[in-house]
Length: 254
Image 1 (cartoon, rainbow, N blue to C red):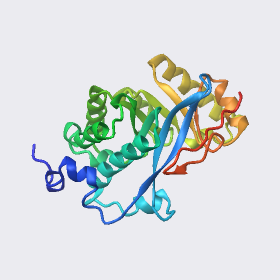
Image 2 (cartoon, rainbow, N blue to C red):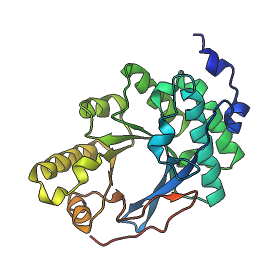
Image 3 (tube, rainbow, N blue to C red):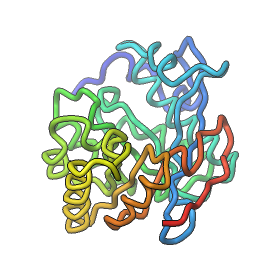
């Protein structure tokens, strides 16, 4: 199989150096806590502009011609900053499946960066959003399979936002799902949301998949979700993202 010209021309060193991008960016970090253990479970790396620009403004500069380089640079930047900040929890990195041409080839810079920055591979969590437009589902399954083989954890983000969540659970068999924020918002006031989240949580428990409730902003939301057996939480109630820094996580009671 012939690799696209963009990938053939970019080696691991160039990916580590962020070659080929005509815009700069960095990362903010937001903790995911485990209320059962009273500890930080993971930190998610979130792309940000250097001048305070939002993730959307940065992602708006990603094109077909630079998507591969951007995706690779995001991984390397996240690992470099995580090492500098002394992160000892899991590090959650979002990836663009359409930027991964062949998983075993496109993972090389990540492995090299993990070695360079002395970050354990077992502590890397790759997550992809259910809303990401992927025309070749078999390709996404192949990516997840290869990442698991390499020793990475995998997560399906924004679960419940798209239309194929249950099918993706079967096909991808992720280690973790992150409930979409729309399901979390004011869940204590919506019976339908509670029924759906309770059912999804029970299915995931039977499948050995952990559930993260993201976008939690109030104590009422957290308490309701905790009643379903969910122990992993992310959102403004816990901590807001901090630019190139680790925010202090708040551990609310149930």
